[in-house]
Length: 479
Image (cartoon, rainbow, N blue to C red; front, side):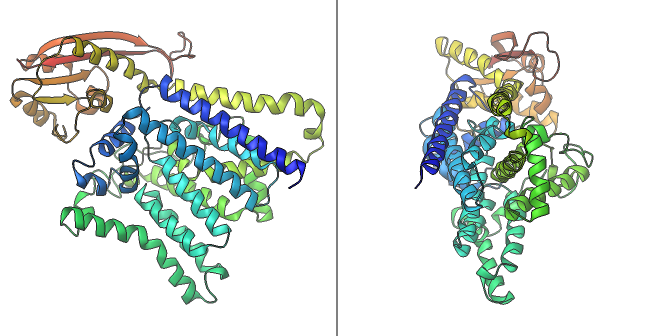
């Protein structure tokens, strides 16, 4: 191995070390997920061994719940550190995949991956997209290395991590049908493609063994996941185009656009490009018509974040051949600025995610209760992190779903010793029940704290997304 290759390898490990440090720091700077989903995914994993059905539930994601059930026994921080490990593995495999594509400056694919704002946002949370990205890049690397059947098997497991696995499985099947390495004719290639059904069959069989219901997946399918309905509204054809800075990174975006253009024109890194474009088109259609309760989140594209990083690297290498980009001034000033600003804006993206700030007040309320503890027979909460800090089994609280009147009736009939952990904002948004209404049901207010929650770097005067968040936490108790 020559000196240049050795130095490139050293730079890759330096980037991995930098990414590890900053992601571990996120675990302790931000105590909760930026959305409720992260907390509930943790709770399903935390209590899965008490309730085996959690391991095969549709929303909980079987493979995620099983793998995270081990670190989850050690606590929320341990599970989030496990995500950091998964993201580092994803970065390492993406670097190795860049080598298989014979790209130059392969070590740069690591920051191009990690500091995509959406990827960085999830790099220290318990969301399902990072695990999907790891499965995707491992399967892609196997596929490129010629391990076609093994790659197809790993790709089949994507379905057990997120619903996108079904659709990318279809794309993978198309790749196999036109890949002579999968067989000398269409019939043999088609047989190889059947391996893509392995994950689904394992899920069906496992759910049958655990629950005794061969149609468990159908019966457990969330009622708001209909193909139509637009639960979270709809968007335009440009819904994700305008959010590309959140997906790719504002300062990485020019290189990504050049990479897409050149890769298509030169028919290079086609599997990486087609995976991104296919998912981009698919989610755009879902968002336009409200299919499958699409909410338009940029985090969906973390699933194919290795593709985004590879395309960005391809664009970077293309532009670096230009005489202007070869100038010493550009190398010494613009290049460091691109990476510094990308890391900085990725952190700002997390800092602006207002929801995770609520954890500060949740922890204050929990600390107060520990100092003024009362016997608790039932426990209800309005945010998942409340159940996490109290270490409560999420199956113990009946899910407060349906009409408001039904929820009110559940709280009214709750026995003495019921503790309700409520807040001012998400409780109204998710349950449409205010603190005053709970108080009127005969519950005594034990604790109340209101605060304007600010980010670490977001300025006080910023009143748009990411500005100060007014929040109030309550503890109610039925004596």
